[in-house]
Amino acid sequence: IDGDVEVARWLQRAHPDLPKVLAVNKCESQIYGASQVSEFWKLGVGEEPFPISALSGSGTGELLDKVCEVLPEQVTPEDSDMDQDEELRIAIVGRPNVGKSSILNALVGEERQVVGSVAGTTMDAVDSQTEWNGRKFTLIDTAGLRRRTKVASAKDGAEDKSVERALRAVQRCDVAMLVLDVTQDVAEQDMRIAEQIEKAGRACVIVVNKWDAYPDKHTSSLNEVEKTMRARLYFFDWAPFIFTSAVTKQRLQQIFAAAIAAGEEHRRRIST
Image 1 (spheres, rainbow, N blue to C red):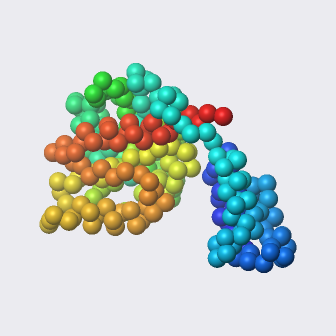
Image 2: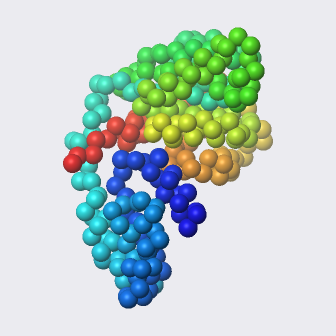
Image 3: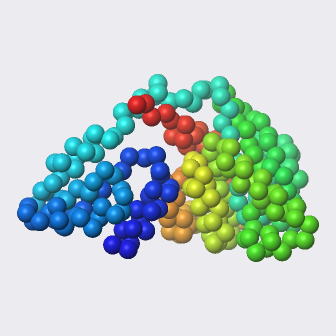
């Protein structure tokens, strides 16, 4: 039950506005089913716990009725509130020196941000406008997000403010572009940044940069690397991966298409 409490708390915290239904499995007894679920009331999930048995099928009819009752109406393409002429805001986030500014410059077709090999070249969240296939985009380049201990050790406080601006950029974007460096393993800080995106409730596209520098590539390299990265970012299994290079611009335009698809999901209005 302790694990159930932990999951219930996360569900209430992460998705407070979503309807919830609690099903308690392995309640095979028709007589004692109600008493078997009594301890699950304290989870506070849904209106009441439903005793069911996956083995015999008992209780599943009532559960299905409840699920159908709380489901939102089906969304049609006409219900989506993403106007074709409306700008899609994309925040480019990631650890320092993974190539965020290089990705931005390659996407807009000109050098909007200074690029350097020294981590921390970008300090402010900078907006740039561009178009692709008639769709307008606002690209927000942000400072690299380092571990809290390293940020706290900075003497002038400028980096602390730049991190705040980067996190605010995530809050005001439609789609967060999490940039990873394919020549490095997915680090704890990458996972923390991904958690911030999830906490903000934003759509996400994972852009794996520096594919041109990946050593000893073969026909299955991309699939193998993606599988390894997805294992680390397991809670982002829904996010698309784009393997690209800001230098060669390989698959760079796929970022726009992926961001549009993710943005449409994020902005979709559920009718009531």
